[in-house]
Amino acid sequence: MAPHVALFATCINDTMQPSIPIATVKLLERLGCTVSFPKKQTCCGQIMTNTGYWKEALPTVRNYVEAFDGYDYVVGPSGSCVGSVREQHAMLARHAGDATLEKEASAAAARTYELSEFLVDVLGVTDVGAYFPHRVTYHPTCHSMRITKVGDRPLQLLRAVRGIDLVDLPKAEQCCGFGGTFSVKNPDVSIAMASDKARHVRSTDAEYLVAGDQACLMNIGGVLHRQRAGIKTIHLAEILAHTEEDL
Image (cartoon, rainbow, N blue to C red):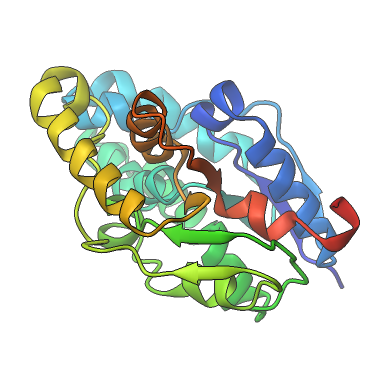
């Protein structure tokens, strides 16, 4: 029986790059999943939580629990937002003294997966039938690696893509400088970090920079664009959804 998956689109993808959740649905359906989009979903509350507005973030926890109730799995193309759900939602409920919500949030978080995790760990696939004949370098985003702990799953998936020329990114583990509100509060530091990252990306001679978080792609991509580097940014889901039929 095909797993029933709820798409957690995330607000930044839905607002800034809707092609990412669209690609996620295309990919999951190609792999045999039944995918639904709960219209009640909204922001995960990460920005409010990280900025210290825990009381204001609590309604987003309740909304997440309600929006994604009844699904086998919740899949999001964002290591950052999935990490927030898993690491912050139950904490917020516990801090508010709401034991019932804490239990519900923990249960919802346990069913929530970042896209590469779901593909490799739940569906058990690394070759998803993708075709992308381009030179690509991969940026492992901070939250995906340090909070959500996706490990090398994105690289496993990318290495199985037909036609791809995947090249290592120097100093890949270094932050791009986005960090949500960090880039707003500390713009000079942020742009210095993003410039370092862009320099390393340019050194690979890649056509595309790929990552699992759109916010980081926007930050690095903005620098690359201003430098007229000619390097495009693309989300992991968009590469994995691409097949020879798309040519």
